[in-house]
Amino acid sequence: MSKSNLRIAIIVLTIATAVIHLLLNLGGIQIPFIINAIGYVVLLALFFKWVNVAFMQGREKMLWYVFMGYTALTIVLYFVVNIPGGTAFSMPVGLVDKAIEVLLIIALWLHKEA
Image 1 (cartoon, rainbow, N blue to C red):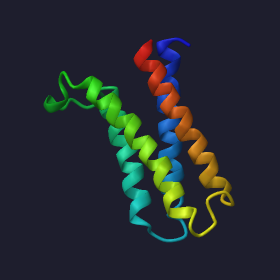
Image 2 (image 1 turned 90 degrees about the vertical axis):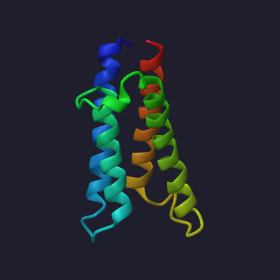
Image 3 (image 1 turned 30 degrees about the vertical axis):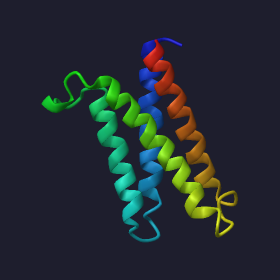
Image 4 (image 1 turned 45 degrees about the vertical axis):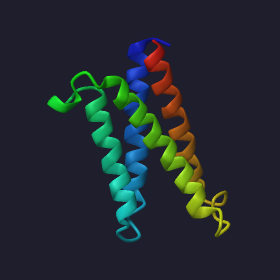
């Protein structure tokens, strides 16, 4: 896959998971979902240098790890929070979002290698 296609995949997958987290607030405000969505958007903007933050100059590799780690942490926390209540595998939106996040990690990894 070309680097250009990977960029598109990262953008689409990140926006998709951010939107899902925002839509989960339709039943009532849930701060963790809002923070998660904002985190994804900020990481996306920093990753592709859509905003110029002097501190990030020369720290692209660290940002790559942070983006992948943030996504992995979101996946892990989903199961930590939902397995005890037995709802982790009964929520289709949650499982679709976790699949999107796994694809995002793969796209980020391939982008680094491209």
